[in-house]
Amino acid sequence: MSPKVIPPDRDPVGRADRPLTIIVDGARVPGVRGQTLASVLLADGRSHWRTAPTGGSRGVFCGIGICFDCVATVNGVPDIRLCRRPARDGDTVTTQTRLPHSPDADRGVQ
Image (cartoon, rainbow, N blue to C red; front, side, top):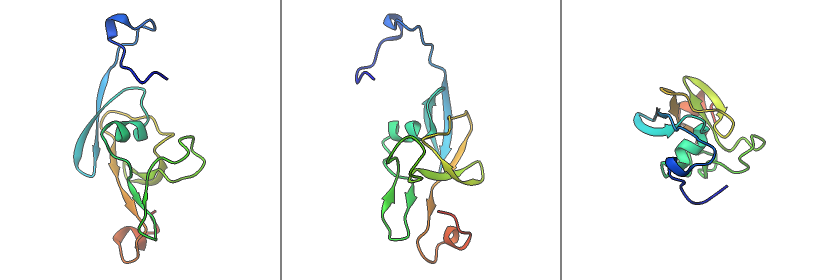
C-alpha cells in the first residue's frame, strides 16, 4: 500500500473513485466506494467508536475481523465489525458503549 496519493490521470489501475457519504452519530462523513466503514472513519480522523466496560476507547485493532474491537451499530444492527463491512452510501453508524448505566449497556450492546 502506498502512503502517497496517486493522481487519477496517472493511476495505472484506472480507478474511478465514486464518493459516498455515511452518517456517524448524526455527522456526515465522506468516503469512497470500496472502503470499509472502519477506513472511512479512520480517514475522517476518528481513532475509536466504541467504549469498553472499563471506559477504554476501542477502534481498529487487528483490522481483519478477529478481535471485535471495531464494532458499532450500523443501520440499527448492533455489533457490526466495521473493519469487515463495506461502506454503502447512506449507512448510519452509531458508536457503542458498555459503560455501566448507559442506555446501550442496558440492551447488552457493546
